[in-house]
Amino acid sequence: MKNDPVYIFRKTWATYQKVISNNLMFHREILTAVRTLLESQKGPLNVLDLGCGDATHIGKILNPGQVAEYCGCDLSPYALDVARHNLEPFGARVNLLCRDMVAVLGEAPENHFDLIYSGYALHHLSIEKKQTFFTECRRTLRKNGQVIIVDVMREEGEARPAYLDSYNKAVATQWEALTPDEQDQVQEHIRNCDFPETPTLFRMLASKAGLTSSRRLEKQTWHEAWSFTA
Image (cartoon, rainbow, N blue to C red; front, top):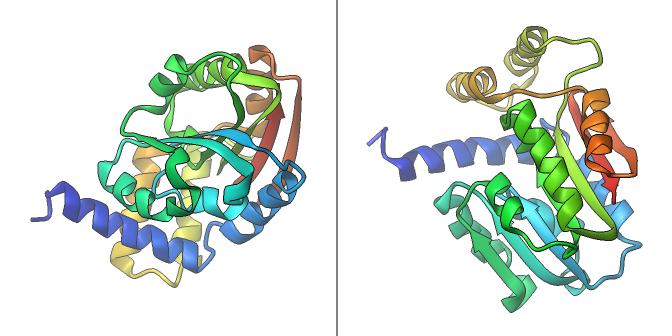
């Protein structure tokens, strides 16, 4: 039972929902900052959501009336099942793909999307794939289109081992809303899956890809939101 993928998803998803509801990763502040930026963009927008998970974030930063087309991708079919329900307000304009986000980007049409959004997914990639991510974003964005990234980032000058130690210490001492088992679950994920970069390196990768400007929208400890413009 414990190795069943549905059981694993439900367990990890339930833990992540506790993280969100208790604002342990500052989702409220960060998504408010992103929404404020996007409120001025009336649309209709073609939107690509990479690593969309259950798609709760996109519904908090965009109104259905702003969206002409929405494409989301994630590696978890179970998360996408939840996403289908959460995206019902967007209507028939929704397309969900159970695929790797870099592969989806590589096959996306040129000059097609107005907004590419990725929330807490990019830090799982190698630096080479992060560069590919930015390069492909530039190719598929329309003129003045935006990439918005919400993710964990290392402080300038902070090495990955120091980041892992500091973040896991914060989980152990500050994330009191989680049970010890849930804290262990989060810490194991961080040790095995977190490969965050610094903001300076992100800006360098984006510039190399041809994205012309960058802007920090919000920062709360290691949790940041950035926009990059084509």
